[in-house]
Length: 105
Image (cartoon, rainbow, N blue to C red; front, side, top):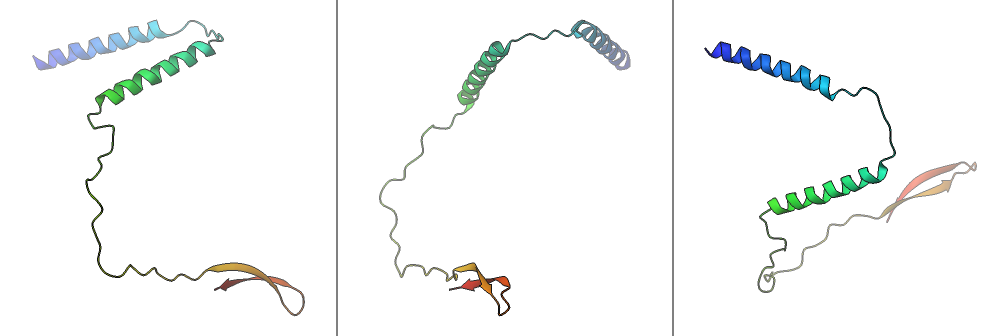
């Protein structure tokens, strides 16, 4: 019984696919200058899609603000790590050839 139903459904889908392909195929290519219509349709689709997506969200649109002052921290402030400041400079050797060297302060 199930095999017959599967064959029937598969045959129906194949027939619909072939019929849809035959109907959807254009007889000839026609190019028209419809830039304005396409632009308007794209903007309208973006606005409607954005409104639908924004309507789905249930989160509040504002950020929650904590109440009261920030907590007090006792003790010395944290010590920043020491990173030397380095840069590249050009030097000249005894024969007049230039070379680059790194200088750190």
